Length: 167
Image (cartoon, rainbow, N blue to C red; front, side, top):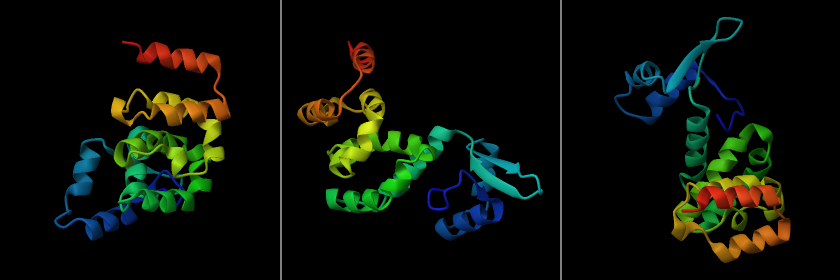
C-alpha cells in the first residue's frame, strides 16, 4: 500500500500477494475479512478492493514492512531516506508516528538520526506523543533535549506531555 501510495489494494492483487507470500493461504484472506482486520469494499464501478479496517493497524504494518529487512542503523538510514519525501506527506502521518516509536525501540536510535532532522522538526508533537509508547530505556534524554532545543517546541505541547507522563 505504501509503494502504490493508496490506502487500498484490488481484491485480486491482495489474494495473489497472500498466495505468493504465505503457503497454505487459501483461507487467510477470508479469515482476515471475517475477523474484520481487513474490509472488502467496492468502488463506483463495482471493482472490489481490500483495505485495513483500522487505520492505525495499516500505519503499523507499513512501518513494519519499511523496517522489515533492516538489521543495522545504516540499513534503516538507507531505507528511510529513500522514502523520506513520501513519509513526510500528510497521507503517511500515521506511518511517521509509528516510526517515531518503532525506530528507537528496535534500533536504539532516534528517528532524526536516520532521517533528515529538518524534515522531522515540523513533527515535534509526534515525537512527544511517542514517549507514551516507548520504554524508558529507549527515551534518549540528551539527544531529545538537544533536538527540542534546536527545533523548538510549544510550551502547551511540552506541558501536556509532562502531565501525561507524570507518575
